[in-house]
Length: 583
Image 1 (cartoon, helix red, strand yellow):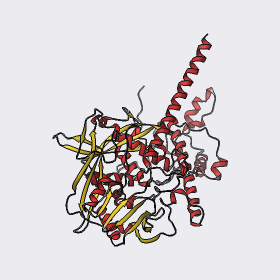
Image 2: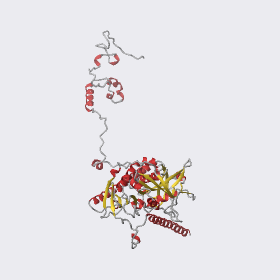
Image 3: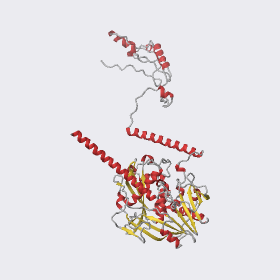
Image 4: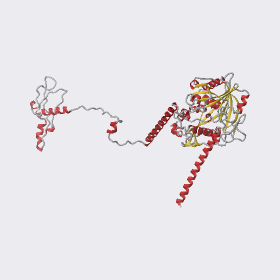
């Protein structure tokens, strides 16, 4: 039996089926049995074959062939299509709007969700950031209250007090704002002349250039070596030079550096000026603020004011001075070999061991009638690869609490040394500028900066040297934006002001609150407490700085020994208890 292809009508009049085409016999045998509904292209088509209309049952297969293409119920089919069209809706493909996660709706109407898993380190950092933010808020509120109390006439803080008590009989001669210092410029015509070099220095130990935080060195204590902080008029060499009319202005490198870097200072300081004939002597008082090294002076957050706190401004200043002196002696080659100069140390007595330091008395010519002589210090010598001798200055920066500065030296010194130095330049701009100015005045070929940190943030007796870095003074001055012409311009302007005054004693005081200095005229017997008829009680006596440092060192040693003794005793007690338990 073959497959019947069917009848295909032929249209001789054109293309397509004829107008009255007869249906093939397989589809019903005639055109009347095939319904046709005209439609447009936009209309939906009805059903061609409805296989769901087959009647159920085993004998319904024969009738299925007749009912599949039976469109007698076409009107019902069209009605169903219309119902489908009526129920059709356009689906929006845009995502639903997101409700804010904060506010009453999110807080009270949201379904409870399980907490998200977070990394422990991220969570710890978040807690530390919250603590730091809360601590800064407390500091800000405290400073705001202190500022308002001071403006209302209330009690002022210790940091807002001048370095010297201003007496009512003192008269103000000049008041110079720091804004006028920034415009000054003076270039010294000739190179300084070395008049005399005294003392003896040791060689620098290059092994400390390889010290790293991973291979740190414990800071040692040098109790037997004496450090001298002698003012200008008490220096026998300067007295001798003044008698010979060697110059008209006399000072030390510490005093000149304080004047040159005055615009960077925040805390109060004072300098005593004596006009004797046509000569000027710049002095400092015994126990002056210039003898101590400031810590975090230019930082945004102030330090605690209670002196009993180990992180207060005064305690940190004593600690920084103590660390700086010991560091300058530890990084030397201690084999007994020293470099001597024209004269021995002018301040050390016979049989007294002095620290490694050389005093260079240098003279600068400011103009035809004015010349300046300053005593400058260098702490060590070194030999360069060409065999020439170099002078070095040694200074140490100290870290007391990484949480205060925000930079941990033990983690950042090897990988981010520039960030550590930038933080120190922000917090100790005045101290670093003074060290650089002293190195330039002394004619040092290299300045070594040591990074010294506490073994523990709460232990201010024991320290470690983490790194030592060398800089050329002129390159470092350019790096910290220290202009030598401006430095000498400040000194020259103050000398010119003082030269116009009459003979007598004056004091230059940095205002504790405003960026300015005031020049007071004081009595001739001011600041002279050495000549008293009856000795003062021991607790009221004003001691020189060297004695304070020795006393502080003795206190530190006693506390460290007591701590070590307690540790050993505790260990022995534990050993005895363990022995008894074993027995």
